[in-house]
Image 1 (cartoon, rainbow, N blue to C red):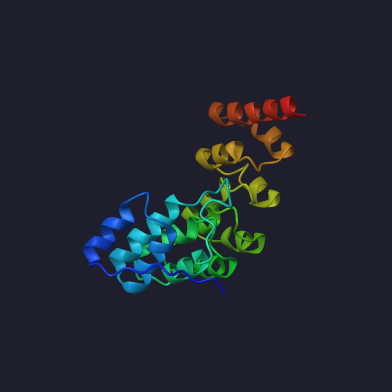
Image 2 (cartoon, rainbow, N blue to C red):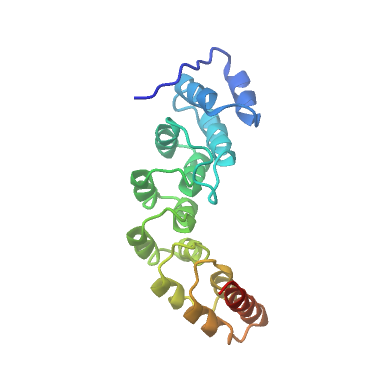
Length: 200
């Protein structure tokens, strides 16, 4: 089992300042989290720091032996912003995503719906949630096509626009959206179809 030898012996104020510095390493963030357990301010700062060190586009960015443990700790925080940051983090373990999909705060569930690592079964369940949560599905490239297709006939033009812009939206759905009565939606879908043709 990999461990970190980094320790933190400063004050809470010093810890908060360190968490705001982009050069503070993941070992130090872990040490601070362990030094101030269940402190909402520290957890919020740590969650934001982890968000800045990870990327949806590069799953190796922010890779660290203690990352899963830190995200698990933060997912149990009383601070909603901490859970919010964990819900959208691409490094969050599936077990934590499953738990946050039932979070009492709808924004947390919405970010789970928008996270590309969320399992399809959870995304299917979230489609039946309230509107703010369902909206998260429209921009998620991992959302199943059958769900994205259901948004085509929605009255919400922004939902249709997000589906048109979604890199995971299939050709058949884009062809339907290219005929949309809203010019922005039809233009976005047409551009995506043209890009597909150019890539072919």
